[in-house]
Image (tube, rainbow, N blue to C red; front, side, top):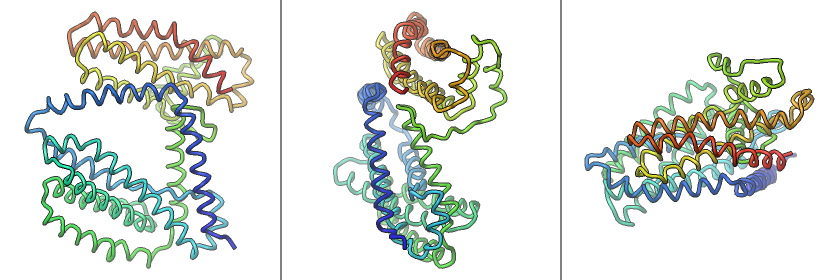
Length: 405
């Protein structure tokens, strides 16, 4: 007989051990330093941005939309594995403790995330809504209470056999959350009592009925667990190589021309890297997000020569996160038996990555020139990308590939 209590503790400890292992690898990455520097720069200009916002800034509406999505999105890690469909399904009646622990774990992490996001947005609340530590505690309490409610009812919502039915109830929860958060940030605490009554009815007389009608949807729970695990692996993969990561290949026919195949040795590897970049995993999305975040920093930080340091920081972040594109092939047998020397593969990778950095520098330069009219600094941005790719990129690439081999 399977002891589900010991099974949960065993899987939780294994998950925590793996998480700590990957976190230590992330902490040793140079990307962490880059993120810390960006956080420091962002915190400096956060206060200046608040002062620059107009008095009629729709803070209540923006915060309401933000927290409505945050509260409605309720991910729950069950730590299920594919074999559980065979070995645990027969003991489904005894799985209450196992899934209760999953829910409690999700409540703890979800509450922390809600409090963290609210703490980040608290300066906006102080400027446009209210101030004082008592109001901070009050708002935080109501938001965490709503998060706990959403996690509980979303777990019961997962019992529904059809995704369309789950989506309908998720939309209903979003509407309730929107009204709830809007009343909260308008400090309409009397009306919040009515919202609590509605939430109580939903919890006990709508979602609470599901457990009496439907059992656990094992296939859906397993698919969700696999999705959440892959998302975590993709995040860690930005910092270090993750062999267990399963890459998703997208069609993207319009981008296939960027990686035209050729049987010539000098063209084969760049084509492979470009196809991987445009079609595999989330590399293209990562590149676009970094460019857009760079635009935001260039817009928020006052014009000056220090803008060059900011863009170099983004060059560093892009290079560190795209190194995993090369190392993901070290587990591919076909890639290793290509009749191409390793030094040619590395040279092709550096050349390909240099092109991406130059494109990033050009985009930053054009954006900065249009924004400020200072075309001298704008011209130096792609120049700094080229210099960085010549002086820093080769040594970084060889070091990363050596450490990961």
